[in-house]
Image (cartoon, rainbow over all chains, first blue to last red; front, side, top):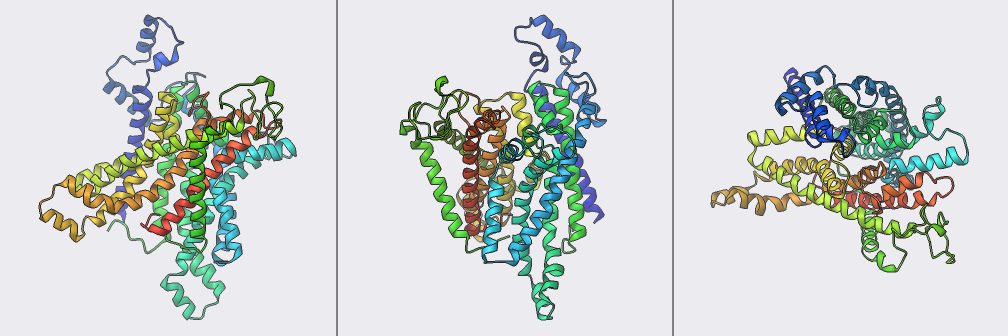
Length: 306
Length: 278
């Protein structure tokens, strides 16, 4: 078992190194920051000056190693916009994204688990049909469109909540609904199919044969095991959402990481883009690692790293 | 994770019919003689949907430049479906070949390719798309390239898994025995056996790619004006939400219907072909 985790840690580190490399290749080799930074028609001499002051004239390998060395300690240089450390600029936006992630995951998990469970119990009946229609609709609705509709109805028409920005807890309601419905739709479908699959397992038949109460079978024997893939899915969704849902944050003018990245891309603020992508991808890799850990803890049938 | 349902085949038929309808609209819609999707008409700005023809017929209303929303939505179907299909085919071609090679040759080839897959999967795909398009600049080719880039991984993983099983079958052993070359074995004898799994992945990916394209266009990083795209129309309509909600409602509904029909078809195909895709 410990050997498996050592390998997994190695893979995670490899992934993070790969990400740093991709970020370097994409931002340094596909576009010349000096040319992009200066207005069109700047004389060549000035471009050269900026290039040498940014260290862009050094061989690519040297630049790469330099970048790698600084990336390890989270140093991506100063933001071209605010002239503050890029990582600091990104970290400032993290709390807003984290709050939104937590609230929408909570809403999505509770709503999704309840409806998924109901759909599995009502197998073949009208209730299942209704639940699955909602889940399918939820999955096909682009979050940003739902966001716009929610703003139109609850903020513009009814005036119950602010249209966007961060202005007290009320601002959290609409973005949470938009993302929570998306999360719930995914959880509902997964939990339902996982429940149905679990209910066909041998140990459920054994439990029935022993004469256990159906409620005990559903709640204890089936639901607990059927929740394992749901937990994984929730963790993966958490990783995705912690990366800042760029469009949702844009729709609600939410001061999070996703919106920051879109703004940084618009203004070609490369240090901020690099710091943001690095941070998000690292969080993503760590959560994936934790999910694997959790998996082995939750399901004794999984014997990994034989 | 196969869960068949008595609603399954009905849902599948609805899904396929909707897709056929969408393709028909994309192909023949422009022949209906509607106003050009890029023709401005400042006299008819922000006209609400109506059958009234005094300012020209605008069933879905007009936008802030007086362009016909119905016509733009129809042309948007062309743009979206073309981009989605191209990206999924391109990503599919790359992913299937990589999956075949990794699964067939195994050993270090497999190890290297699968590590690359792991690395790519450790970056949220929408972030990768945002990063690449943001750096190389938005254009139609770049958009398709990026969407394909986010999509090949899924094919590669699933196809590789299938190849590992197929590789051990007797007919592959006998193909080796009669001295067929690797290329011929891979493409003539293994490929047909992994196509049904790839088809299921393609439908899942198509829905994802369409929504991602809309999201990128919404952020101004996708399809560029004046070319109509649903995501872009949503972004433009956002500012007029309170006075002219139809500008954003119709393209949003179009994305919804497209994603829904592709999802329905995908679920049905998965039940039908059951290639153990989870």
